[in-house]
Every structure is written in C-alpha cells, then in structure tokens.
Image 1 (tube, rainbow, N blue to C red):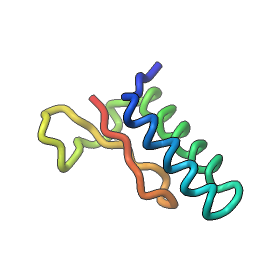
Image 2 (image 1 turned 90 degrees about the vertical axis):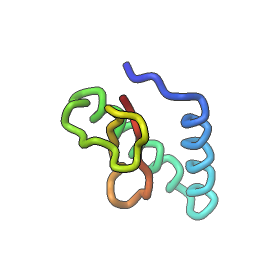
Image 3 (image 1 turned 60 degrees about the vertical axis):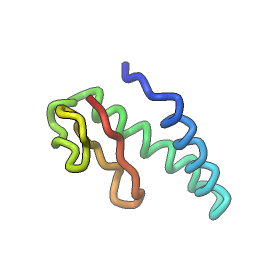
Image 4 (image 1 turned 120 degrees about the horizontal axis):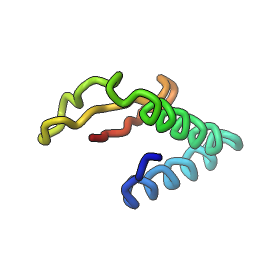
Length: 75
C-alpha cells in the first residue's frame, strides 16, 4: 500500500473539484487516473524513471495518462 502525503491528497481533491466544475464527470475520471497511476507505482516502482527536477537523490516520477497534466513524485 502506498502512503500519500496529506497535502498531495488535498491537491488531488482540489483537482477533482476543478475538473468536475468544468464538466460533469471529469472529476471522477481524474480520480480514476490518479488511482490507476498509484496502482502502477505499487505494482512496479522500479519501472519509473528518476524525477528530472528532484533535488533529492532516488526520487522517481510517475506521469498520469497524457490527458492529465499531473505526476506523482515518490521514493
């Protein structure tokens, strides 16, 4: 199981609300993309590249599907 920083969880909820306000149904679709990305990290964390902008060694980045301009940074 992956732990999510509380601030990151709030950002996900804010993004969900933002997208749902733009068009009904986009909010839940965003949350599904976030959960799918977390599942992919959980299944194969070594398969993700190093985060190109991280100041801390060992941080990796998992991009959401192309429709969503988001990523998770993780160690």
